[in-house]
Structure formats: C-alpha cells, structure tokens
Image (tube, rainbow over all chains, first blue to last red; front, side):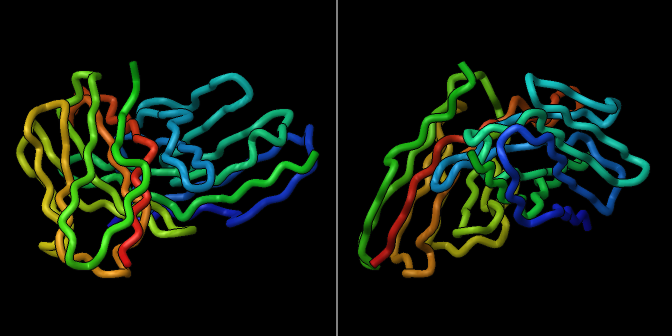
Amino acid sequence: KQEVTQIPAALSVPEGENLVLNCSFTDSAIYNLQWFRQDPGKGLTSLLLIQSSQREQTSGRLNASLDKSSGRSTLYIAASQPGDSATYLCAVLNSGNTPLVFGKGTRLSVIA
Amino acid sequence: DTEVTQTPKHLVMGMTNKKSLKCEQHMGHRAMYWYKQKAKKPPELMFVYSYEKLSINESVPSRFSPECPNSSLLNLHLHALQPEDSALYLCASSQDRARWDTGELFFGEGSRLTVL
C-alpha cells in the first residue's frame, strides 16, 4: 500500500529565502507525482506534475524533482514571498485503478 | 479553461435535511472525484466516476449518494448527516484514467458543509 510522507510538517522562513519541501513515498511504481498548494479553507491548486519518466518540472520560482528509485520528490521555492504562505501537498498516483495518495502536507509561513 | 466549479460554497443543514452539492467542469474530462477534507488533514477520497460510471466507492456511508448525470456534472446528495460529517467537500476531475492520460487532477474550491 502506497504511503506518502512530507517533511517538515510546518516551516517558517523569512522573506527572500530559498527553501525545500520534501516528499517521500514507499512504492516506487508510480504513474506520476503532483504538488498542490492549498490556502486556508480553499481548494487545491495544482502547482507541478511530474510523470514517472521525468526527473523534474519547473514553473516560475518553483522546481520539483523526482527520484523514483529512492522514493523521493522535492519542491524547491526560490526567493520566497509572503504570498507563498500556504499548505503544500504532495500526492502520488500509482498505475491501475488506484486512487491518488496524499501526504499530510507542509504548512509554510513566509514572514515579511 | 482549467476550472472546476462547485456550488454552493457554504452549506448549513440539519441532521434531517436533504441537500445536494454540485460540481461542474467543461474541460472534457471523463473522470470526476469527490473528496472530503477535515481541518488540517489531507483530502480523503470518497467516490470516483469514470465515463459516468461509479468506479471507486471508498466504503462511504449511504447517507452520501453520488450521481453523475453527464460527463460534465457530478452531484453529491446528502441525507440524514451527522455533525461529524461537517467538512470541506472537494470535487476534482482528470482527463481519463487510461495510461495515456497525464493523470493530472484539477480541484474545485470546495463546498464548506456544516451539519447542526
């Protein structure tokens, strides 16, 4: 059974810092991995999707990497801003008729 | 248009009421999902529809009844709910569940349900 772990659970950084959020998964036979952002009381916004055959994806200040063999993904946020404050969720999709498995998220606070 | 629209945004209901949550997407997606999310927890899958047929039911109590009238619409009918059912209900869609699909999920903003 796939399990997804996110470390740290919470993170507080000053504005301007570069930071890394970590996601690990137990079953490396994944179809894709998706990073989401969630603001309090809101829905999930898809940030980056990495297919199993890819190593990384970039969008603006965000870069996500995937190492299937070690069961790890990282989300790198460059030059963090207060507007980046949110919960970041990692989710893994395995092949077959299996549902998306979420980590518990990392709550990020960027202090001005 | 990568939008999934959910209505209502907020719903307050008594334990004897019958209400429905609605979800709509116009991206041509053929898979639609209902998730339940409690505070400070990740979303929990409830139901998956694929090509308008129920594909996954994660042992959800029968007081929650999903319906997929067509490929763009997904409803969640609520009846005789309990206070512990109060949560954010999220709808999502993806292109397909076949291997050629990227598998990317798009979520709506959610419906905040309070059961009194």
